[in-house]
Length: 76
Image (cartoon, rainbow, N blue to C red):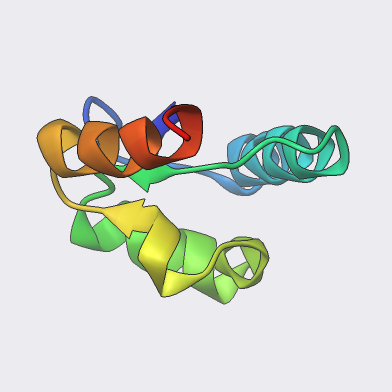
């Protein structure tokens, strides 16, 4: 889970690091969930093309909703 709850702003370099994390995690066969990105952070990630790596079903406003989704991945 990429928790952006405490991130108030994100720059180009940081957004690229987030992208690298997302890509590497997905390439290893694991799911990636993003949670808590405020409007400014979300907009930056969207403009940089980072969010194209995540479906809308993997982006959450709250940790609780993301954790409920994560539970689906670990329970058969």
